[in-house]
Image (cartoon, rainbow over all chains, first blue to last red):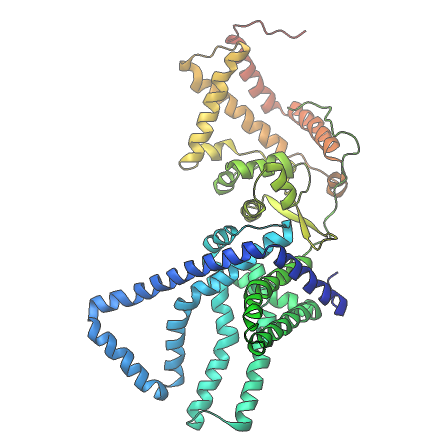
Length: 290
Length: 200
């Protein structure tokens, strides 16, 4: 049950897409709703950052700051650019990462009890906001930040954007890094939904990946393949590509959350616990209480 | 015995208390089964289970893969019986202490339905006597050791309940302090008996 082969992977895909299709209306409503909430939160976060700055320094210096930032973007040093990206990207995209994490909450409901509701996503969003945001930050820092830093470093060293073979080498490294790290952290959100802390979920994800490498990476790669196929269809099959695009967002993405959650639940089974014998008779108690 | 006020607070929530006391102390159940039994949304039950797991009251027992692809997790209570620490409840902050005091007052006044007429002026004394008795009962009960836990866990719930009660009675009868407290409480009840309660 815990190890992988081609049939297991196909079965995982089949089951996850079946559940995603069965709950497609809940997912569509939940995703629209949660995106609206995430958008509102993003605006609020931007306002929380920008409004005090405007109140303290005024609007004019603020405009000047962004204009000069645009002008000097190309001469920023790696550390400055790193700080700026982290400072701006994490608070602004945090709500969307939480929204993605909340979909894993819906997936958990489906995988464990065969049903979910659109409003369920908001409960996960609210209850797990900080943990899911923390998970999103970890994912961002581990998977994307090194690639961004490497590109910045390469740009700083060479003085221009790379082309040709060096560019291909960096791109290849970036793809391998992205696939490996996201695969290694693919059990992160299911772990957080399972009640683990961010650090606990990271450890759990890495442990499961090491222990069941074939199952975790097999599942992860199969969903990447699905995403590539759907993305290709979206681009190639214009105008029918719109349908493929919608299926990518509202079917393949939920299927991925369901598939990964299902694998997480299977791999974290502690089957060693002793089973209880059920009552053979009507379960009547003879001795009165004290 | 549950003495941590945070854990007591978790158990005082009605749905959580139903999950633990009505169902999971008797055997393991899935989220779906609990949701059906309680008439709640599985998502809601999942959040309650998580809170109970965090409080150490519930554990995941096993996982079962169904033919439809569902991965059912079975949860059970970490003990076959939970007793709430009375002293800890009364000393706790706010709602828990109020709940405990109100419950004792309610129990004392409700004894009137059996012909035990306890005046308001003696309610405090009655509460103290009953509280001491229950605390001792809890203390003695929590010391009863199951020597073969594996076999005990394999017993059918009804048999397990019966043998637990037999052993609890025995342990209480063996404890002189409990017997003394029980005698004081019974003397108090006898002195306030107005109805015709008789042992046949």
